[in-house]
Image (cartoon, rainbow, N blue to C red):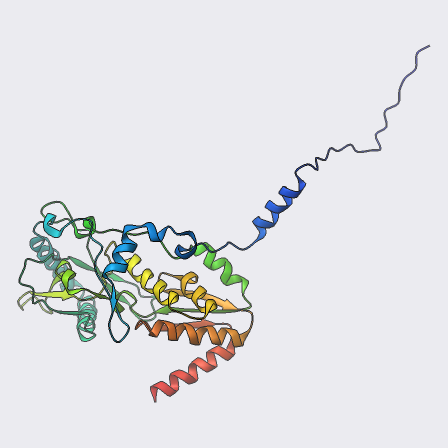
Length: 324
């Protein structure tokens, strides 16, 4: 007589391994946390970089607090060849474009004139043979302030094949990643954004290096071509981004308030501030102290955006008082 076994289909079988449950839960919570800020002050990589040594040894401040830096060169400028003819050719091509776009010519003249009025460039008094930079316009119609920006081509090779960017250190990125900044920014109840006005041009270049940043210009094609020396950190130079970020970092180092120091060193992406707080009073404190900290280095924070009516009203009153 044979017996058959009935199969029970009313239960579910599962296997569970508890041996590594603790470590798995730890990894889960770490993945859910906001990214931790890792900057030059807490991982030490910057102090080992030659561009940091160069910055410390060659940077000083004027009585006004303004930074004066030297270009971090990895080779002597002797390797640069003739740059005049290429710079002149590019200027003539630009003037041909002006004939077809008179509005562009007007904006370009206004830009160069403002550059001069602010002391950011001057008539060249150099006796040695300088490095001439070609330049061209970048137009952004959606910009609130500067519709046209002149970009200086420091990557243009000279007759020797080397450009001024070839002999500069670039430097590491010492600001936090945009992803981390935006993630923290979205975490706050009250947000604050702003940008630094003409950030690069608030930093002077030592006179010893200004012969590497000379341009050719004239307001009209019937006038003689002039040589103009750029006196500040120049947009388009390989080291410009590091030098600007390092000056902001230094201002943060000099701040006595640890919270404001953290904002200065971790919540700027290039010249844009993205930060916030869970209370309006703290947000107003951050805005006030960050402005003071930046003013100590002759930087001006502007174009404020916030979801805090209290901060925007206070800022409007402040601007009104200053204006009158």
